[in-house]
Image (cartoon, rainbow, N blue to C red; front, side):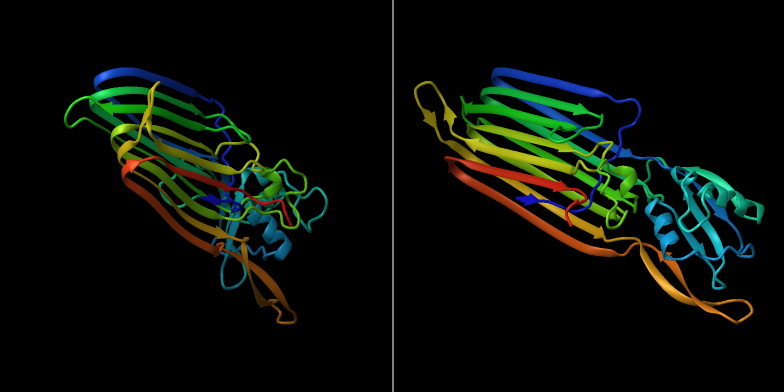
Length: 360
């Protein structure tokens, strides 16, 4: 199963990064167990200014170009029925950015200072990990991994490695990689090995500016936006064998300083005969594997144009009001495979990749 070319963007690493590496090996007649669990949440933690007013301070909306610039940078605004601003959210990253359509040297910071002089209140707010709605311009990922093996009344040979690295990664590197190699043959009545493994990656992001997140200088063309999204994928395997060999590989990448590197998840699972120097014995028991995905994507910050009239009533003109991005795609997919009995071979390969396409 292969999925590709949605609009996920990786999260930049935190300033201090960690690496966790474990390797477990065993050759045991009797009982053996292995358990792994982990949950990791990461966000880009944007800071932004919130400017509020009751609407009496004026400041008309400036039009489509300025609206697109604000929303692409992770900001937003709210206006009242009179066309006056009541709230503006301005990311700190935009403070020194030139305002489109304004005189040279007039930045968003200049505009913010002018609005404060006109009566807007100003507050600096930090993002951080959220359990509720994301802040403007925020990206957040959660990944979870779990695995368990219980072997009893048999001969078990096990090699299990786990590698977690929280630093920025590029193709074909991974932030998490888990590899399992196991052989088992029952040596007594009721002997069996039971195992399972699951990997989830759940990412959500608000509209952000492509030129701020992508190394390619042409990423902002034709539109300088990475749209909002909310994507979750899950994959896993399970087995219950009296004899057989199992290999499994799971990996994922979602941390990078450059959004040109797509988010990726891979899963390879294989059950095959138990081999000896003289012959091989077909695997006996049951095995299964699955993949599930729910993809939700926007195209851009959505704009609504309304007609406004000057206070004197002499001129009517269009005003563009930015609204919450609308969902433009909703894809749900589920797949599972299972076998039971004498197993000569069972293989499942899953590849998921999602990133902003640079293709026209």
